[in-house]
Length: 385
Ligand SMILES: Nc1nc2c(ncn2[C@@H]2O[C@H](COP(=O)(O)OP(=O)(O)O)[C@@H](O)[C@H]2O)c(=O)[nH]1
Ligand SMILES: [Mg+2]
Image 1 (cartoon, protein in one colour):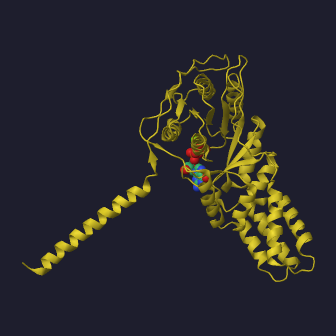
Image 2 (tube, protein in one colour):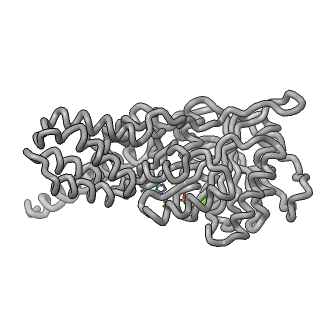
Image 3 (cartoon, protein in one colour):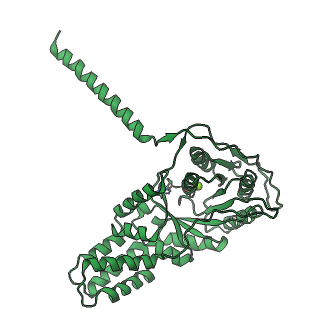
């Protein structure tokens, strides 16, 4: 037979084998390592809602976690390393301004002006940018000559001071005890405008808590879109936690109440309540958010109210933050999309604006892309250390 013919067959066989190997390998990569785990015992049935304040008594259902294999969240330590790398990799204005400054032999008034302008465009805010520049000029530019190593150390110190190393950044999830001595779950209410990353944050946070050995229940109080409930339930299933959900259009306060009551009755440690993205310009919707919190507190105190802000929205995000702070006592900020924003400076501005610390940061869409906010690590990331 024609050798060319045989060669063609051999080539085809090789292509098929190589393709098969590639497919198998890419599958292996796409799937996170899984491990068989005991699924949490199902919760006691949700108690019927009772407060007179509720308008619709839409029955909430509990979506039990599926019995498929569960993801095991990445350990916080390795997660932080990766997140820091990502932060350093984002071309942020703050990092650039600092690098420019450090690259000068002599720093004159014009260089300081440029530096200040760069800081302002990094979303640090005019006040903090001016303060930082003034502090650095005092400490560094005595004779106009800056030793890079000293400059770097001083910058690091001043930036950490600006971010606030002493603020309490714990996400409070420890529940107390009820009037009859029964254990109450910690309750985390997650609020913010649509699309900022609330549901994603609830999912990621549930993973962190589960990894720490806490038992968790989710409340899908975003009842405006069925898809929102599905999205949360999927997050829950992946780490083996239950999601209490209402029918589409059900009263969000009712679902939140049912979720927290179910959490208490089944003795979970923490209930995370996802809410709808309220249009902060609509007074009625904001009032409703206040109601969600009041109704939950008929069962258990809300231990943490996390306001989720998209770091890429800049000033607009700050306006949202102010409006939300008027209706609920925000106790912590989650700043999402820092990976894409290149605007690390917003951390400082938003904390000043609200007087509330940034507690968590989102640095990607991946399931483990949520990290506790640590000022020193954040600054090191920004400085590219
Ligand atoms: N790049 C990036 N995307 C994020 C982050 N957090 C959330 N997202 C994405 O933002 C979109 C909206 O998120 P979602 O949780 O549905 O927002 P919600 O409407 O506030 O509940 C989704 O595509 C998320 O994957 C983050 O930290 N970084
Ligand atoms: Mg959502």
